[in-house]
Amino acid sequence: MSFSSRVAVVTALAVLLGAPVAEAAKKKKRTKASPPRATNMPAGWTWPPSKPMVALGKACTDELDTLGIGWKPARKELKIATPITVPAMELGGVKLVSVFRRGPHVMDCQLALGLARQLPALHTLGVRELHFSRIHGYTKVRVGGQEKRTLSRHALGLAIDVRSFVDDAGRKAIVLDDYPLGDPLLLDVEQTLGDSGGFRTILTPRNDPESHDDHFHLEVRVDYTKPAARKPAT
Ligand SMILES: [Zn+2]
Image (cartoon, rainbow, N blue to C red):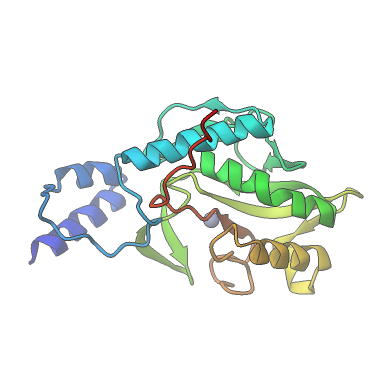
């Protein structure tokens, strides 16, 4: 058995036994000479976070400050580069309501900023609340009914699963029940967020009916190879 397949087996066993993936990952020897692996992680993403990632995180929280969005640093979570909470749980005029879990809901700053930028467009459509089942979770990608080897963007705090949207008349459009009926609000939300360019492919019942029949999976697009914008010298 090759080293890499042994690592895969150890990792798989660790997952099966409920041990954190990190434990297995720690045991894997790191050598500078090892070639870069093809991954599905954001461009430039490393763990621990590289200097550019830390700088982008700082630029992100600075921008939240500029936008007047209250945030707090959160305790470190595995694989979240810039863990924060947004105590008001409202971004871009839309309330984020947790369906199952109590807060605090730790997310990467980039998700908060992405939502702050994109949710005003949903507010224009009449959306006032989105009800989510999950933000952070140390899980792998699940698509087409199968679990992939890649860490999901939820593990990075960059994604949110939305089950329903409430409009300004108080009507709740539920993905599971109303999307198959061609609910106009849900279709408009899907189209608007897809067109925004701020998210990677949005997973919905349309493109992944097996694993996303009851929610929209939104993950903010982040490129850690782009240097953080410097504030102009004054
Ligand atoms: Zn998801």
